[in-house]
Amino acid sequence: MGKSSSVWRRADTWFIVGVAAMAGSVLVVAAALVVLLSIQAAPAFQAFGLGFFVSRMWDPVDNEFGALPFLYGTLVTSFLALFMVIFVGIGSAVFLTQYVKGWIASVTGFLIELLAAIPSVVYGLWGIFVVAPWLRSRVEPWLAEHFGFLPLFQGPQLGVGLLAASFILAIMILPTVASLSRDVMAVVPAPLKEGALALGATHWEMIRTIVLPYSWPGVIGALMLGLGRALGETMAVTMVIGNRPDISVSLFAPGHSMASVIANEFTEATSEVHIAALSEIGLVLFLVTALFSLLSRWMVVRLMARAGREE
Amino acid sequence: MGTMPDVGADQTVKIDVENLDLFYGKQQALFGVSMSVPARAVTALIGPSGCGKSTFLRTLNRMNDLIAGVRISGTVRIDGTDIYSPWIDVVDLRKRVGMVFQRPNPFPMSVYDNVAYGPRIHGLRNRRKLDEIVENSLRRAALWDEVKDRLHQPALGLSGGQQQRLCIARLLAVEPEVVLMDEPTSALDPISTLRIEELIADLKETYTIVIVTHNMQQAARVSDYTAFFLNGELVEFNATAELFTKPKDKRTEDYITGRFG
Image 1: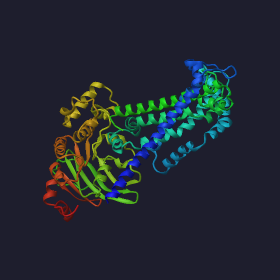
Image 2 (image 1 turned 90 degrees about the vertical axis):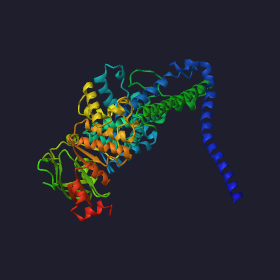
Image 3 (image 1 turned 60 degrees about the vertical axis):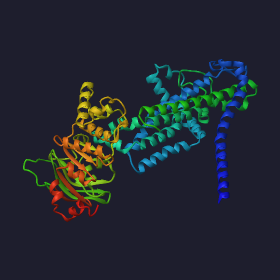
Image 4 (image 1 turned 180 degrees about the vertical axis):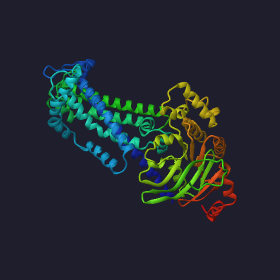
């Protein structure tokens, strides 16, 4: 008895060491990633310093590298996608949790989640063959006609460009936003909803005053996760953004993104400083996504505290 | 006209239920319930778990509408108007017929905003008016003195008993005519229970109160009339003193003497 219990106690210790090591390895991998990327990026940082982030020149032939067009393209397309998806994502979550019950809700929810299972290269193909021509022939002329006074909707209508990339990204992050928002709205306590209705609130008033405020922190979290996904998306964006390192105000114009420039140029980069510049962009991309996920964490915690709930 | 307990001739009927059947899908939960609830009095609904008393209560403000597959037949009239008629505005009905739930369900907002919730959704924006309504409602719910210094703090910081009184204040702020209470003290300690019971005694001067309770002593303490439900049927409905001392039905007698349930 005594012996077996001491054996078990030793096993217990080993178990703790084991799981601690597994948890630790995740941190080590993340740290290693940052360190190795930094080492690889060092030559570019030495050559261009902080000017790397404000220079719009990207010329591999002359070994002149600036990251601004890629930062710009990534941020503009991601935020535009987020903006496009806010209403559709939250609206569909409200509908699926507050208005329909039973099989319609589960089938529709399943179909939305299915969007997440489509490989991004397929989205890219669809973007090239369907979305870009449609934008060029219908949407962009319409926008130019009615909102052409805004610099956003001026210039040649090419189809492929920032607008196309944003549109594809919006569809790609929709399942994330919609299904997470749906999950948080589904758990709004029934007594609160009944309490509002029992006071003579209409269905919409109940949603506006109870469901939305209650699920707001979770919805913000869902949007931020969607944004994170959009920032890092590579394949589909590369296929429709146009891949030109320009900064133009017009959404019709082609652009470039951090992820797509790495995917496009890494195999062809021969000079050391070119590789280093791409590594530095990779590092920045990593930091930007990490920053947004920290920001979303912080926002969720703060909103929860303000709503008087703890997580 | 539903079953009316033996009351004075001056007693008016507020809610008149006739031959009410209710089904959850295929399962029938209420069988031909007929009863007349007197105005400005407390009517208690008692009976063992699953006897249909809460279900019955929730037909009076059409809360059962929210549950899929619920079907009713028969009529429920409030002040002579059929509340299941297609011309009835359910939102308006729920404003007139308020409800207090089993567990306190304050909204996750401040004490003030909880009480002001009803008036606000019904369109009141005037700050001074709102202040007035909030204070009056809290006073009538016997909560004002305890919360007047923390009106803008989260309602969830109040104790369970205070939360339930807040829910009553929130209800009074929309000036209902009928107050339905679904076991309002079942989640509360004895002292909080006592305070709610005192409050009920005050409120019946103004409101018609229907209260579901698990607790027969509570029914005896707070109500003027008591209805005994069993297996979805209304077995007996009478003045509380009569029902508890001289039950007419054998099943009522068995229940109140603790032989089952």
